[in-house]
Image (tube, rainbow, N blue to C red):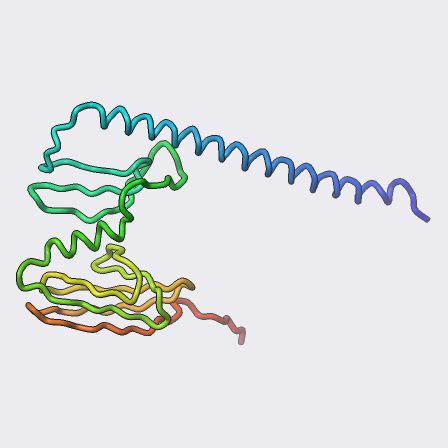
Length: 193
């Protein structure tokens, strides 16, 4: 026998699910609207700063993409690697207009290579691991880098939290191949005794 009291909890549950779904849709719409407004404000700010008549000098200048997601600073002809810039206005990632950070970092490494540059060939198993040289993201494996002689810490990070690292010393006009097998950072299974 179904009593009205038995039906009410199921109806409340169904209504609360519908209510939560509606709230999620409103939240997604508001986030999209806020992102659009932020993008338009950044584009307008970039347009005003570009029309402001910059001198074009590279000494001590900073160029950053819209939204402040990455920056390259040049001081006296030396490039500093691109790093994420904190954006106090938003906790969300902003789309960039300029080159990707890995392209900027790789170019900075190759620009500092000089006459006696060495070559570093980085491969990973599995392929397409993210490559970090001295802590800067420079691309995906496999890849060949032309870098200055010196000591480098090469880290590979896989798509499933796999990891490998190696420190290598590169001599002038030397070519080294680094092939690393990625291993799990954390145990895959936890057992009980």
